[in-house]
Each structure stands twice: as C-alpha cells, then as structure tokens.
Amino acid sequence: DADVTQTPRNRITKTGKRIMLECSQTKGHDRMYWYRQDPGLGLRLIYYSFDVKDINKGEISDGYSVSRQAQAKFSLSLESAIPNQTALYFCATGGANPYNEQFFGPGTRLTVL
Amino acid sequence: DAKTTQPNSMESNEEEPVHLPCNHSTISGTDYIHWYRQLPSQGPEYVIHGLTSNVNNRMASLAIAEDRKSSTLILHRATLRDAAVYYCILRIYGGSQGNLIFGKGTKLSVKP
Image 1 (tube, helix red, strand yellow):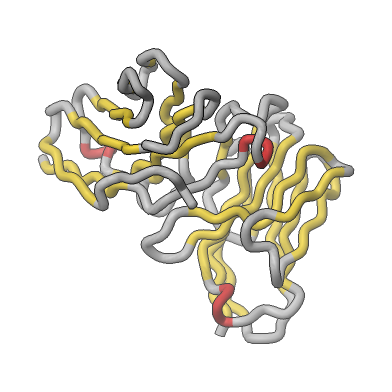
Image 2: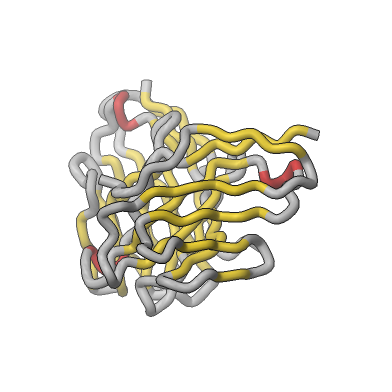
C-alpha cells in the first residue's frame, strides 16, 4: 500500500461549492504539506503542519483552509470553489528533520466549472 | 522566487549519461541543494541532496561546484523511466522551516 494516499483522485465541481480533499499517511511523520500545481509550473505551497496543533500558511493560502485531524490525516478545504482553483493538488509528508526528503502522494485533479 | 535556474528541457538517448545543470548564484553557506523529479502523472519524488561535497546514491550523483554557485545532477545511464521533470531546489536552512520552493524544472526526454 502507498505511504501517502489522497482522496479523491479526480473531482469535478461547480463554482461556489465546498470541497474537501483528504490526505492520509502511514509513514508516521509529523510534518504534512499541501501543494498545488498548475500546468507547466512547479508546485506551490498552500499550507503546512508540523504537528497536530501546528498549522501554517504557505505561499498561496487565500481561498483555502486545512484541518489536521490526527498525525496521519491532513485535509484541505475550498470553502467556495472558483474556476482558478482548477489545478493538481499534492499532499506530502516529512520527518522530524525539516531538511530531509518529503514524500508526495499521487495527487488530486480538481476541476472547478 | 525559486532562486535556481535550469534549462527548460533536455534530451538524452537511452543508456547514455545525462548531465542536468542548475545555477544558484545567490546560494548561502547553509543552503542545501535538493533535487526532486516528477514522473508523468505522479507526485514529485526525492532524488538526492547535498551541501558542499559531491554525493552519490542509487538513483544519481550530484556534483557541486567548488563555489557552490552551480550543481549538476548526473544520471549515469538514462532509461525510458527517467523521462520526467527534474527540479533543483535550494532548501534554506533556518528559513521557512526548510520548505521546498519549486521552480519550473527541466523536462528530460529519453529517446530509445
């Protein structure tokens, strides 16, 4: 089984709808991250969490919120989706040392009509 | 800003070595150089990282210039599976808690 899983893998929704993307990990890592990727570009950091009680905004947090329900679970919500949030979303985890490698999930492709 | 400069694309032949360059002229003394790659339709995966000395692992080698203003990721024998976008990333020690800042990367094509 994959170490980092994301659900759903694909989602099509309409403008104004609330959407939740979920991420689970079995690596036992404290650090979890949400990134978005637009076509032809690298990933940009949305939010990150260093433990259950710690949530931090990344480069592009406007329009998004997160919840760290447990060490293994980190959810990303779009309260009112808009078309320019159409993108590929990746969850990642990292160990206690922030400079060690991050492990990425397979991604969620979100389309907002 | 990503603070690294990479060519947009490169081509290689299968089973030949590939040298992927990266310029990072503004690197600080404590910044680590990380490489990730993203295979088609997948999330990024870690390849290698280093600080000052050259590094080798099962996937690749990392050659770091003496002044640290550039580095080269070396794939010793490219395979079709190595076709991916390769990202060179500076991890800034002490800043943003080591968060990854991705640029556009280099798209590597491997020809049979």
